[in-house]
Length: 327
Picture 1 (cartoon, one colour):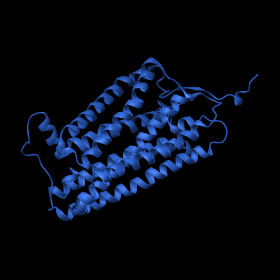
Picture 2 (tube, one colour):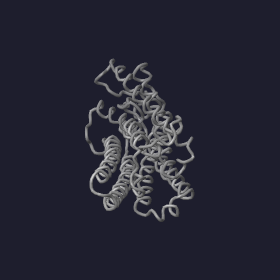
Picture 3 (cartoon, one colour):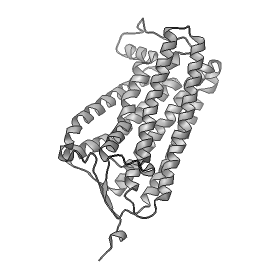
Picture 4 (cartoon, one colour):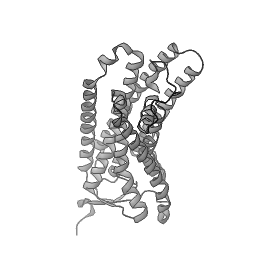
């Protein structure tokens, strides 16, 4: 007779939202509606930026890239999650699980790097406007792209490789809606220290580096705008815009960090809550980014009006030249 310790599972079953049991299907309609809305908003924003040559500057191309990442993240996670909720198609192979894990974490890390690049772009535009064309151009955009792909690809390939080398001889039930790193590693038998350390290193690399630089950039931007703008509406608008950007970013990083490190930190988060946080981690940025960087950006609004035939509409409010990049 073969001992269970000598057999490693080749397939796994997702069991997100166990408290709902057979009523999990009720989550499918709102999840599908939220996903469809986010997909439509991001696709529209991509179309506006790609179609209008006036928006082919580095800042708007970064926004476009962010939308592409959100589209891919939703496509990698949500359809299979909805199928699992409605059709009970919850089983996945180890290879499929690792592929989904890589896609999820790779796209999240790319989004983090893009948010950092966008914050630095705004910092140069507002605080170093005379050197903007010198520092930010096609060459810089290519460099950022290569750095982003190399950074995220190398780190996440290492993370997934370590997880794939483990043996899974206990439960084959992943208590999540999709293949998250810690949700899979927690099922491993034997020593998981290297995978645990890699998970902490990933958070340190992205959250520990990107967040301080993003916050510092926005503080510098806010200070420059306050010094340049007259007291009143312009300053309030600066606080509102910077605050909105930072709040959404902090939610993205906080939810991602908690779900990613819940096993390491021994938080004991209920499976239903962890599953919900995992979905919000994908949906919140995808839903918020088109509003923050699309609807509330004057030049993109103008680009949309031009595409639908309204031309350059009058009355669209734009900040002073050194602050317009924030809108």
